[in-house]
Length: 231
Image (tube, rainbow, N blue to C red):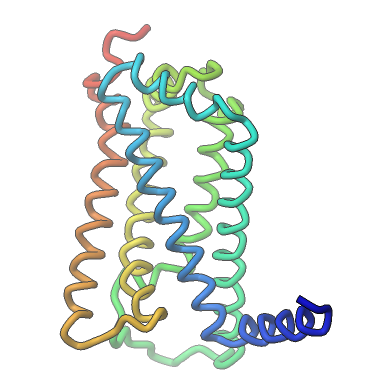
């Protein structure tokens, strides 16, 4: 492709992203990628119920190819940055359109999940940073051993404050997922009076299942179902 053609394509892409629809599409596409990661991450984490040998082997398998692992991490980081940056720009755009708040604001056509999207996002971001510090970098203030996720998770979630923060963050994440999933279909043009209620119901079910799966781990540790015999 010639240089002028590349320049035209870049300008078109920039104009598209500058539009509200463009930002929403970027949020939707990056959200799909991040949702896929959440599901894969949950399936990996649930292996803790199969015992230390299984999940420790899974961790070793993930780290067997550092170039591939870091490529995936960088790609996910780029998707996260695009998702957050698009959300910030959309919020600023909305605020600039009406800088003076309503005297009496009524939540018409919205739900709790949609109304908490902007403040739940930063809390989830704080959680992600701490989660990485705790279980990837080993600097989260709880015992840590390299490539020993079973022991790390058990020792980490035995602290009620850590377990409570994790549960709270997962509930917020799943309310975020619920609204994001069904609104994503609308952004991408999959919107019909016959299908939208089913999409919303499906988003509720998927978000609830992910939430139950995620919070089952700290609850299992706190109750001794997982790691009860670990010193």
